[in-house]
Amino acid sequence: MSGKLNSLTDVLKKTLFFFETLSVAELIPYVHRQMLADYSPEQVQEKVHLCLVQHQCFTSEDQYIWTLNLEGQRDNDKLYNLLLKKQKPLSLNEMTQSGTGGKKKRKPVSETASLISDGRFVQLANGYWGLTEWEVETGHYSLRHLIVKALKLHPTGLSLTQLGDVVGKWRGTETGEIRGVLAKFPYFEEIGNGVWCYNAETRVIHDRVLKRYLEALKRQRERWHRDQERWNRRVGGMKKQLDEVSAAQREAAAALALRREDVNRYDQIVTQMAEKDLLLALRKKEIYRYKEHLQKLESKANAILYQCRLWVRRARDGEHEKNNMQEALQKNQQSLETLFSKLQQYKERDRENKTKIMEIKEQHAERVAELQTTIVNLRQKIERLQDVREQEEKIWREEINTLSTDLKHSMSETERLNRVMRLAQQEVVEMKNRHKAMEVQLAHPLVRFFAKLVAKFRRNPHQAI
Image (cartoon, one colour):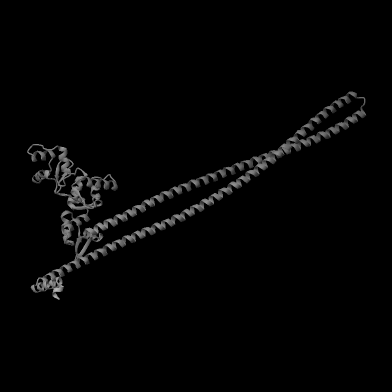
């Protein structure tokens, strides 16, 4: 039958018709490949399970293994026979007109709903309807499920060559691929002499154990992701702390730069003070020179007054000059006093600057010590966190090893149970054979006569005495 299927229900009908029985987990790959390629596996599983539950054509006893009901509805038998005769897809109008003689009895909506819930019909993408039993595209199905179908068709078992011939009708495969699939899964059992058969109970156990193992791995992976996110957050916090430490170091470097600037300023002030001291020394020398000059002038004036009393005017002029010189001397003395006061102020400022420099040095040393202690504490915390992380990784690896050993143990237990079941079946067959032999022996007339006598004696023991 050529054409694309219309809905998820039609894909499930075709798949279950070909394989007869499948679980939801086995249906998911085919549905995901043919119709719901954009959905995640969890979403595909939810939609498949909802579709199987909603439609009556799908049946399941334990809600695990699903089958397709091909009995259908009696109202649709005419349409089914019509499609069998035509052997081609037809639209709903064509089927209803030819099936009812040109008279429509039911509405198109109810007719479509009845065909959807009937396992014998599938709808194509162009709106035409066909039969589920028409040709199935086996290229969509895996080799494992094709082998399962072949062994279900032959419950007594098939050899490797016979199995290759049966599967080759649906899909071209080599014998090595079939042998690899048979050896891979435990529900393919070798009875003897190269004959293989399919054990459905073992498959159910295998699927459940595999599902538990995958769920355990999923939980382990989720826990691993949560721990990884937690460690990433911790690493981010440690990076922030390191950034803060680096910012503090940069502040310390800025403080050192400020200290250097203050030292340079102090050196400049010291040089200026030295220059001013030099200027004061020169000024003192000039004052001493003025004093010597005054002394010379006084001596000259005395000599002139002594020698030239007659020169009154010149004497008065000398006195006047003397007065001027005295006034200049007083002015010089006042300037010297002001210079001495300024010198004392400069010395006091120098002392204050020295005390400030000492305070800055002490603050810088305290800040550097605090930063060093914080860096050492952060390094110790990082080492502790790394040790805790390594211990947790060791614990997770041990848990994974224990889970793998449990899986191997469960596989060995399933094999042992299969062997015990085979031995039990053989014992049942032997007991049946013994029962038949006993029945044959009891069928003899003498044995029956003695059995009746024994029965009479057991009923009336007092009469026999």
